[in-house]
Image (cartoon, rainbow, N blue to C red; front, side, top):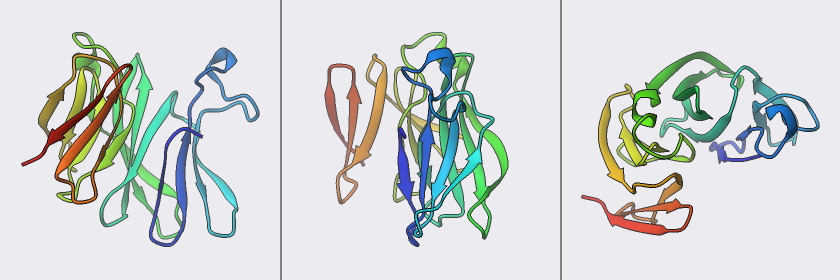
Length: 172
């Protein structure tokens, strides 16, 4: 497992990308997937069609899951509706990072949902702020591959990690 998020009922949604594995496939099961573990500890494969699923986060209303894909040939942010049974449906590309990746270091990786509902997604050159409708709203430039981001408890600060830096920025 790489990244995860948990819903209010205790379901854990997580990604399992191929990092460090031969032929870019996860070792034991042979796929790169998105999974759910329910409170009974039963594991369900939700998606097996993404090449490099990475960051994952649930929307504030927990009706949507967002997944960053770290594939250099298809660096995108996906959104999926969460069905009543916890399965994922209606997957679509919410934001395409390909053009941005040509001029900046890094690929989509970690992401967090702000209390505003906006998505803070690491990607080429830093952290991108994307609306739930897929509109690019803002950009925090680190100039480096940026792996993860998070907020403090009150969401007054954004924290970002790169290969050799921890950055804190005050939010308005």
